[in-house]
Image 1: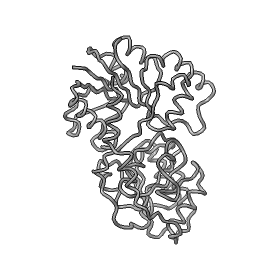
Image 2: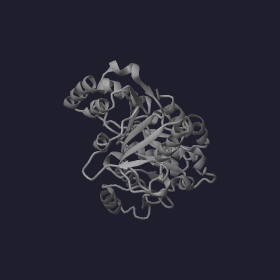
Image 3: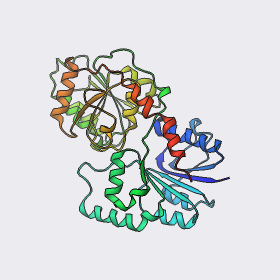
Image 4: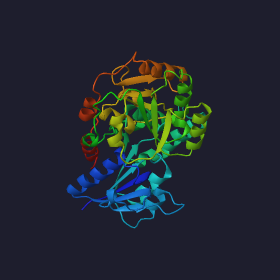
Length: 352
């Protein structure tokens, strides 16, 4: 029986069951049905029901998930990483410990809006030369990601780099059937790079009369939450913007809104966008990352330049006043091209 180790720099939480969690679970099931033995290594995990059938190792306190794996006694035929940094010494050590293994590295990591510093670019290019040879297959979750893998670590990696788009379980999402006029949702980690502060500023520029009846519900947690709450207080938007905390039931909640807003500065390929569109909720988002690979302006959402509060204000005003409206059902594309079964199948095809 071939043994697979999957190393994920990812915290498992019972109140945040999202697209990647469903991928991990279905991928584990499919691997076992194909005769593989699977060990999972996560940054942090306390057992809960959703993951009860997976064999999971949680990194010890003050230990990285990579080190947790390197300390394991088992040897593996296949090693797969998610959400870890590419081309580090870890891959050399993993290959030395498992000399006959096939190593796959899946890149979910967004890049800074203005790119890396010159010094960091040089370091990454050197890392690609030194450690890239220990990775047998690079996977980007969007074409944007693949382009950056090659740009960051070297175009000599092109022959072992490919795109596998993220996918979601479209069957679990409740589809919107009502207009839900001027009800907006944000589903995001709360940190500055997600740009929620721009949305709050944009709302402050809209006439209070137009904001009557407008609701913006923010689902998510993060260190920036206090600052965002202060900003809402400063702009007197407490009756407009509501912080709902984390939720494991977003698949049931998207349908209660008219649009999702994702004003992000950094993105790789957003599962939240796929989830929203799957529920027939158009998306207002920025041009970063792989967003333009799925969101088409005026068709299934509205696109603007990151950080451009004026553009965002105009989009919101036009939606609130009824001047602009997305009438097309947005779920079809996601069901056909970005479904979870297709994602899992494509990842299974990578195995030697």
